Image 1 (cartoon, one colour):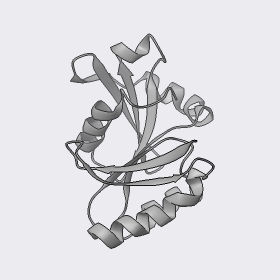
Image 2 (tube, one colour):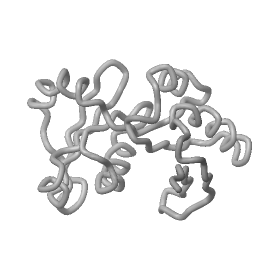
Image 3 (cartoon, helix red, strand yellow):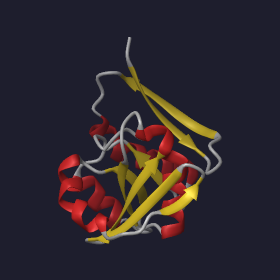
Length: 154
């Protein structure tokens, strides 16, 4: 039996809530419902949604950016989009965010792209790229540092 797990955690990683969904549930179908459910239970707050790149659609991301207050997110960047941004990243400096983790930040089209390089994961997958919207550079660095080990190769 396969299931999809949606996990809601505090900034320190402590679980607040979870949802179990059938394994054949499309992630894209559940995202908007999850936003409404979490806001209904916990109110509107400054949250950062960390998602696999297959979860949100471009339309969902547009809704997140247009929300009041805007919804912050960190999501993996599709390889095709990263290829288009690759040259822009070349001129950006690396910044250490913790031991063995460095990042490059790129503001592009109202998005903050974070290229994360983890020495521990580099051998396995190479660098990770995520788009962070409506989040400060510090929040993005923190989010990238905390989640780079859990992100897939992008």
